[in-house]
Image 1 (cartoon, helix red, strand yellow):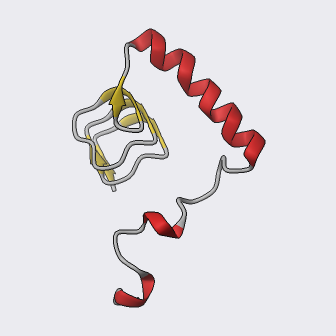
Image 2: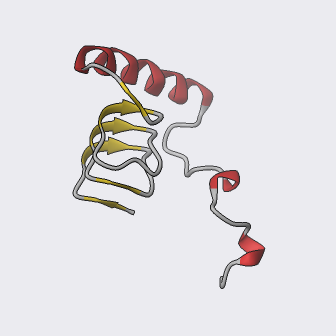
Length: 78
């Protein structure tokens, strides 16, 4: 769930993010990658490199792995 966020990708359980990539549980973040803040220039250089790598490995466009789930599927109401 992401609320009041813009220009984010691969982020989950975060609020009020701007220009973030791969963040989880981060609130009010800006120019962050994997929950680490970067300067605008560093962010704009690093983000495309990560995306290119993800495309080469086939990870780009895929859902988060099941290991990222907060609890095992068997323990959910599903």
